Length: 134
Image (cartoon, rainbow, N blue to C red; front, side):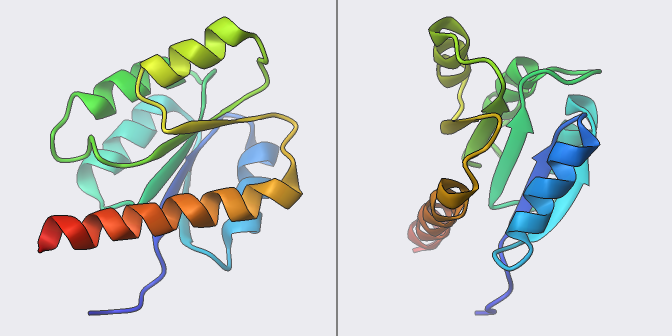
């Protein structure tokens, strides 16, 4: 078994936020950055990822639509998905969780909590892969 870094997809139309998230993850994972939900779905279908971090408000396919698509495809429905959102209203957060989000983080991001949160989800994802292979 290889000790390759986990792969994380970061989807956000805000290039500054996307780059900041990718920079924070550089020691934890190999990161693929995309600017919209349609591009994210294409990558998720064609490549292997251990985690996706997505914005809710993106062009082409918003975060809710992306969640629905991913959760409807058996091959990729297991991928943990963290939603990034500037919206703190309860209805939006509940909708994201009901649409299939694994967890959410509110923008502006709390960078001190970000790393441990993502490390935890990557460990869970890795454990799930091992369990599924047995």
